[in-house]
Image (cartoon, rainbow, N blue to C red; front, side):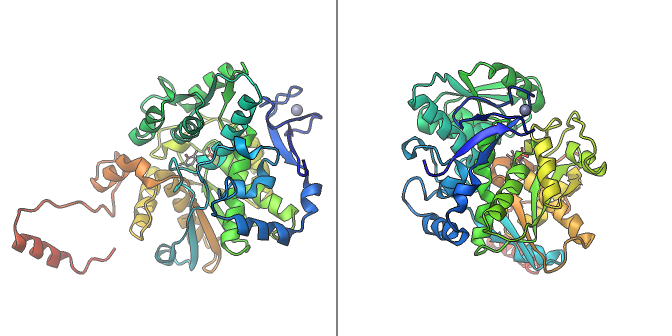
Length: 444
Ligand SMILES: *Cc1c(COP(=O)(O)O)cnc(C)c1O
Ligand SMILES: [Zn+2]
């Protein structure tokens, strides 16, 4: 094997494990393990040669390299056999030039990375393809795995269910009862996963999954598992690639369990290490004010981090009080001159609705990131001509009830400032025409 990767303790204890070894925590200190790559061997190939290779593979048909994740296989999981890769052609998502939206807040160069326009409708697919491929390799090498399991705020379970069904692997998903959208709930059901709604919150589901997966026959699919982060790292690489290898000034991403913000930071750090880029963007993590443990830590200069009990938020996918990746997120935020912002429920709903009026279709989590963008632009931390990329994390169609509720003016405590109520009219040309004429001047 030319390129090598392994896992090791993220707190610095000695010892290395294979990516297919079932080790989530360091046996010595209990800290999380992380993936490390043999950077020296990767450096034997020049940065420009890597970039050319990635461009050649990007969105082509040769399996598995056409996938946005597996096109960067050597930087993700070099040791996986191609026949074990479970890919649903993830990545390769649109970088939406949000020209009208940016201009509406005085910015000239705002982009939205549509990483939720993916097979199961969220960016979770980018990490799940790596994790389920590893499980597939373990099973095909004779390993005894009965099921892959996760706790979820809705999107992890949807993604796990799809990849497992595609590979013929059993999946079990634990969900906080009545705390995820209907559209997210139907996904693992339709894909045949054992779907368990528990009378607790996400953090409660997570505690149960962590206990059960101490038995290695039940494989843990939450982002405690470092393989997911490796796949999600490719978001950064793909963004830079889409800008013809230019680095944007800002990346804004909503954060819950804080795996994605970590992955995005690590993607940029790895590209810099390999000489593919010379500078780093500033990284902004946006949290819902009702579920904001990282924001609170940021206010202390990251001196302390204290888990909280997450309050209710429209951004249900980030309603998490005890994020698994808090320590590693803080580390990468420090490396990328990071900022943490928060958004109230009203700010979340308003930002999502305004963005939609310029052609987007934003989920509430993306609304959190957009609201953070408003604040940074207003404070002039982001300058008018800075290049900003907002990470859209899920397809808005998964959160149809949120959007219907907004436009019907029925979200508790939300002032639906730009609600667009459908009108009911009689079967009558004159009535229809009169209504159109009375609205003629209204372009959003
Ligand atoms: C999982 C998820 C997030 C949060 O990502 P973390 O890695 O948990 O911080 C944000 N938005 C959506 C739509 C998600 O599914
Ligand atoms: Zn350790």
